[in-house]
Image 1 (cartoon, rainbow, N blue to C red):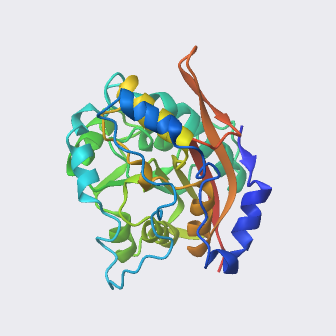
Image 2 (image 1 turned 180 degrees about the vertical axis):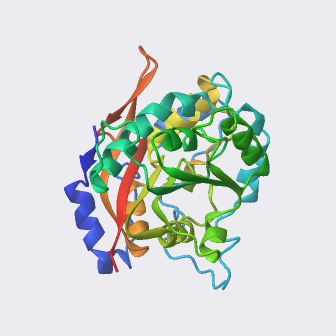
Length: 315
């Protein structure tokens, strides 16, 4: 189930002066490495686990660029996803985990955004009249159901192949053919002075070069009083074992090398990054997988996959 921002995170959220001088690490950052080392002996091709005490993606990037356009792009990550772009709508292909997770992600989005925008969650089209942007939309597996729920959707992705696939698939259904797909970035939309009622970036932030700059762009795209939703993977020992070793090397749910553990953010880090971008995190939930049913559900456990809903401070 989704839950309000935990007390310990809320305390961290307000202690800005303290955190200016102290980096927040995962609660599991000090765990023993013996488990990981034994796994590496078994799986020689598994990527090494970075030292948990090493610096996470910077909360305060040192970039002084006046143009934001290239700031969050990671060319290596773009190339990885371009190589498998044609498989976006293959529910048994490389994106199978996202297809399985999608209904649960949508349940969280529908619940939090209906409550925030005071919409009827039982309505067939609760988001009618609202403008949403799906940042890092891929082939459109999130954009399409959002459009069916009535939202005016813009889907953006830096991989041109993804946008072509998304457009082709959306045109098959009149209810999704209105989606505006653009091969661009959040930073470019900022330069164009675009704004949206809700800005959504799911499973994207762990693939960008500068998470803090990326979140600044998401915040700028969000209208005052609007909503921002981000999902990602926690930088924890458990996430390394499940999201990388199990998902990529044992179960082969994802291509090897899809994720880099050192690029993950802890919930505490994400809350602080968003706070500095004028986004107040209101709710968070974890995703729990049931191997017996093959289904995902919302959970209070945010030690691996988690999703956050925040609101932009009114000006």
